[in-house]
Amino acid sequence: MKQSIYGLTFEQLTDWLTKHGEKKFRSKQVWDWLYQKRVREFSDMKNLNQSCIDLLEANFSIETLSEEIKQESKDGTIKFLFKLQDGNVIETVLMRFNYGLSVCVTTQVGCNIGCSFCASGILKKDRDLTGGEIVEQIMQVQQHLDAQGKDERVSHIVVMGIGEPFDNYDNMIDFLRVVNDQKGLSIGARHITVSTSGIVPKIYDFADEGIQINLALSIHAPNNELRSRIMKINKAYPLEKLMPAIDYYLEKTNRRITFEYILLKDVNDHKKEAEQLADLLKDKRHLSYVNLIPYNPVADHPYDRSEKQAILTFYQTLMDRGINCGVRTEHGTDIDAACGQLRSKQIEKEKARKKNKQPN
Image (cartoon, rainbow, N blue to C red; front, side, top):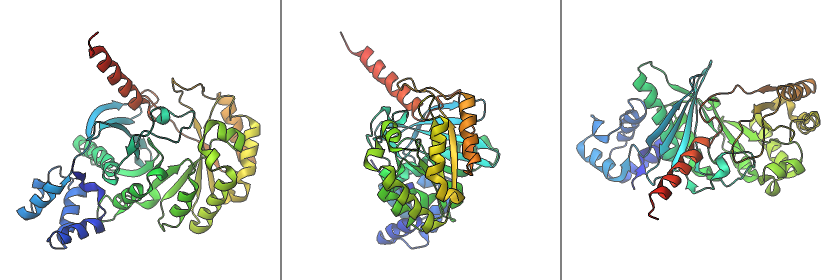
């Protein structure tokens, strides 16, 4: 299988072309055809000489994802199920907000983090996505928008789909540099958010990258006992290791961090957990925002959505303690809302289909 051309940053593309005998200016032409004109065939790059087109066709692919399923919600959310060249499938989601169009991308085929409430981890990690496969999710969504003829563009990105982004760090960083490049899609760094479950060494690395991209931490519990019960990663990186890494990030970047907190009925949604969370964040509240997330129940997990009053009490407790917070607006609740649900359903359907085809 040829690698995706989208996996190269502009500098990497320039180096590759010059090493293969092409002039340096060719990279700007190729970049323009890919990200401004958004062609789907190298042969459509009209101002390239034929030898350059042949060189690209021999070594790269433009399209490595194919659309398998597209679910559209009443609220405008669209969930795409894409098939990769090796037959694996991934999810990508387009969400509409009053500030623009945001795409949630996937970074791995499956997930090994194993959060007990998450649909993404039902199926274990098969492999990392390449940088090109992550970029192409944005390109496929943008090409869908182009086809609608409404002159809409992807303006925001959240790296919060299937997988742990910091477990695929190098490919994720290449992706960020490609979509942020002003010569290409030019999606502003402050319009991009990367979420992690708390891989501590990579939080330090991310702080040192010198980029203005936002960081979100999936914290989901304010103490080690509870967090280890619902997020096994806390056993490797407990709060005593995690919070100093967050402090380092805040000191190095002076950028606000978002703490993601999924509310699970009668598990982590009591007033006492809100008080503990406020205590945990009190010395960094000037650069913290807590995003309270109503839970989307998953068939294979034993959790339920918190009652509205419990959510309100949790929210008010944090606000009373000076912790800036909000309750996340829900999107796509009528189309397999939880991340990973569509993918796991489709894989189970395929398994059942193959089983039914087997002779007795």
